[in-house]
Image 1 (tube, helix red, strand yellow):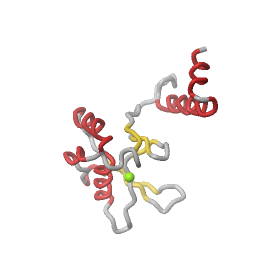
Image 2: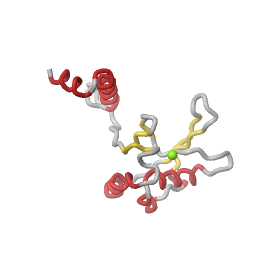
Image 3: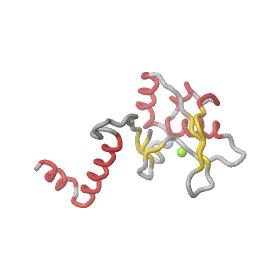
Length: 136
Ligand code: MG
């Protein structure tokens, strides 16, 4: 996933017109947001997973997914900062946990909740004061 310019986690995406191809749009955005490294593994029709209507908007989101080797994933992560839209539309890549622990400690929802609270604390009091508070 990626940290988007609006502070949300998301995937490469873009708008295509009613006559446009979601697959062409997906490959165009992958190139803009990940760079030339994705030329080795273009999305194909077989990578299509689902579509859904975005709440409150006249937008249908089409979702594609592709399995990469560990080496391909590492190459994408290493070279993504050189992509055209990196630092504009994309602020960074994020590996997210795809599981929820039974005890609710250490999984993604817990991590995001804690990070959000820490960010708010730093915004209210500044990073130095927050650091001192957490060390007590
Ligand atoms: Mg985009």
